[in-house]
Length: 273
Image 1 (cartoon, one colour):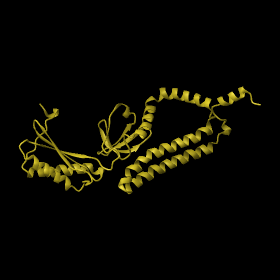
Image 2 (cartoon, rainbow, N blue to C red):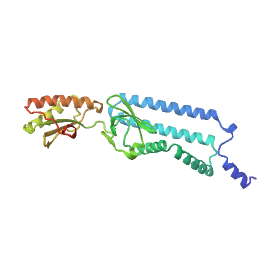
Image 3 (cartoon, helix red, strand yellow):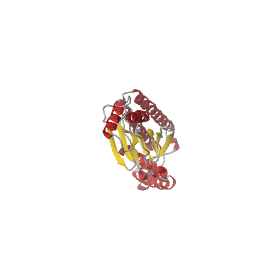
Image 4 (cartoon, helix red, strand yellow):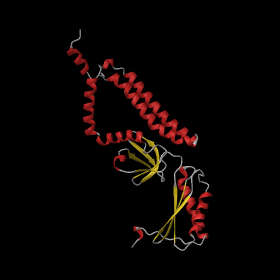
C-alpha cells in the first residue's frame, strides 16, 4: 500500500521520466498544429478576396481566432504528455512561471494579454482601416503579440497590442463593409452657398466609386477666412477610399470653378506668420 510520503513524492514529480514521454506524439501534434495554422492563414484570406464582399471581413477576422484556438488545443494536449499534472504541481509551475515571465518578458506578456483582450473587445479586426498614433492603414494580420498595418504607401507597420493600454485606436469602419470619406473645400465668403452645396452633392452622386446604399452629405462651416465645405460620402469598396477622395476633389474643384466661386487658403497655425 502506498504511503502518504510516496503519494506526495509522486505529486511533486513535475516532469515524467524521459522514457515515458512520447516525443513522436508531441512532434506530430506540433507539426499538425503548424500545418493547420498555415492552412487557415492561406485559405481564409484567399476565400475572403474571391468570395462575396459581405463575407470578407468575417473570414479575415476568423484567422486570429482560429489560430489561437489551435495553439491552445495543442498546448493542452502536449502538457499532460510532458508534465505530471496535479493541483499541487500546477500551483508550483504557475507560481514559478509567473515570477520568471513577470521579470523577463513583462512587455511581451503585456502585449499577449492585450492581444487576448483585443480578440474579445475587438477594437480592430483583419480588414479594418485603423489609425494608431500617426500610422493609418488596413489591418492585414492580427497576431498574438501585434497587428500588421498595410499603409497607403504600401509599408507594413507592426503595432504591439499593448498600445491599447495607453493610446487611442481610431477604427474607420469598425467591421462594416465601407467607411466614410471626406473631401475638403475652402472658399472665399462671397459665393452662392446653396449652389455650391448642390453641385458638390451632384459630384458625389456621379462618382463611379460611390456606394448608393449610404447617404451623401455636404456640411459647411464659416471660418474667419471663408467657408469650409466637407463632402462626406461612402465608396462601394473601402479599398478605393483614396481614389474616391481624389475623384471627389478633382471634379469638385471643377464644379466650384464653373460656379464662379473662388477658393481660399485655410488659416492654420502652420501658415500663420
